[in-house]
Length: 210
Ligand SMILES: [Zn+2]
Image 1 (cartoon, rainbow, N blue to C red):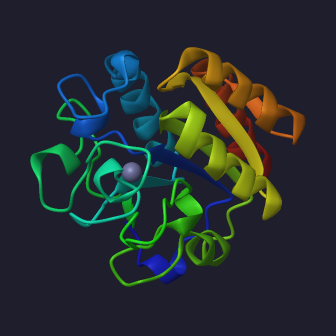
Image 2: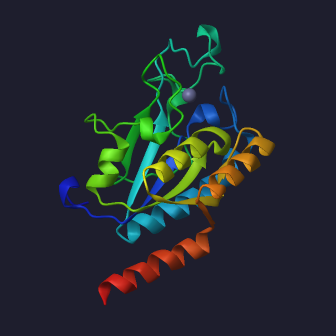
């Protein structure tokens, strides 16, 4: 991969929180998590092989946070820093060139959105997106009714075009997930599946190489 400052990527993929605690066997498992691993791997390969950046976010909580039930929050403990539950799900093939983002480190906040995430150098997701001149964000991963929803809303509010990759997102509650998809679509997000995304990326490349 080129040095960070030389990359321009008008389109970018974000793989949201596909970690052990959100998958079968984890403390906050989305039961359908395994259905999206193969599609996500295809998307990661598609974006990176066409020269577009891939972001991978992780929930990365301290042991004590008001996000957890034990400290006044909504959720059982999950994705605690340096634990097995916080590791990416083993079937996910991230490759070497992904941008890693972490969120949820502030014990006073829920931080559902990837726009609350930072890279290892403390750069915010928004700052990186602007630096790479990203205009369109393609969202995959977990969970549709929380982190995907909030990330999509923040992306739209920051003037990005948003695609929800419906063959590569899953939620905690199916009804809430459907509502979340409707809600972000009403704000301007579009739905996409693999084949049309592939065509979209290729036709974009053809248009810029003319
Ligand atoms: Zn969390």
